[in-house]
Amino acid sequence: MNKQDISSIKKLFSTPKKIVIVTHKNPDGDAIGSSLGLFHYLMKGRHQVHVLTPNDSPSFLKWIPGNETILKYDSQKTTCDSLINEAEIIFTLDFNAFHRTGDMETVLSDSKALKIMIDHHQAPDNYATYTYSDVTMSSTCEMIYHYIDILGDSNLIENNIATSLYVGIMTDTGSFRFPCTTSKTHQIIASLIEKGANNSDIHNQVYDSNSYESLQLLGCALSNLKVISESKTAYITLTQNELNKFNYKKGDTEGVVNYCLSLEGIKLAAIFIEDKQEGIIKISLRSKGDFSVNEMSRAHFEGGGHTNAAGGKSHLSLDKTVEKFISILPSYNKALNND
Ligand code: 5GP
Ligand code: MN
Image (cartoon, rainbow, N blue to C red; front, side, top):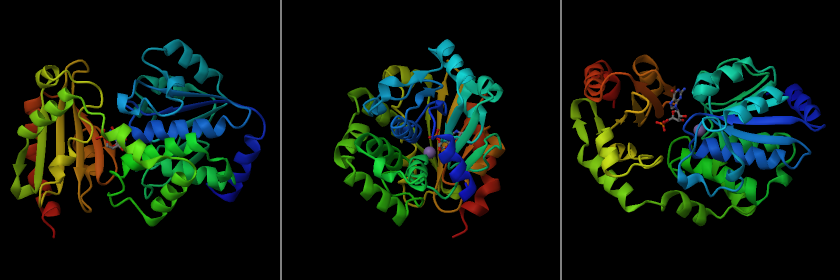
């Protein structure tokens, strides 16, 4: 966004508008945090604002202020469709292409509303009137902070905005340890704490909400972990039966893939999770250094994301998906062993 865009946006929001905020399917901490942070900010104007998600979020995000107002497309389609059709402005947050919203793709691409994209994923589609895309940013939440600041409104950031934005910065940076964490990220975090975000409480709400069964499922996942040393790779599989056995709930496998990367010398990590309902294997890929799992996922697993964190899927069986993964690894051995 240039100076011209900023003054146009200021003008645009100077009168009340019907606004919809949407984010990606299976929303994570950054998706919900950025949507609710922006929601609380926009609600300070005289706008009508609704947050819509394609489906539900994990329970460890449900305490975020304003979460109870979120409408879910999979269970409230008619209401969501009319809100999208009537919207004058649609913010699309934390995704780079409409297909990332699952079943909302058609109604969003058909909508005549002015679109504002705020996102940090690589290769953004060109559908928005205003595209604020920055792949160097830790999180969309960090970008919402900048967005509010650029518009000269950082004085409006209070407890609810600060808490929401803190969540997404914390989750997308792996609690401030991934390379995307900069000194600016820490300055923003400091400012959010000053404005009312309770860092310790937020951490407890998000990370210390395991159930006995989710820990047992983690144990199962860790006992399935395999290492392919010549490719500096570790991966985990979870079958639908294993998920059922431990009474799997949305969010229970969040972050499990990172255990692979905690092994000394491992540069590439993957988790393959069977989803019988959707008929797919859900894949999460993570890496260390400059090995791009975004490119790997785009090339082989119908997905994408960032250099060090990407998602994808496979329509093969779990075994065949793992076979495919193992078979493509040799072509990456050079990149994985280049240190
Ligand atoms: P996760 O493995 O946690 O599902 O996703 C890791 C990162 O990649 C997140 O930032 C997520 O938004 C992104 N991501 C997941 N799936 C896709 C996909 O299919 N396409 C793109 N472009 N990004 C994805
Ligand atoms: Mn994000």
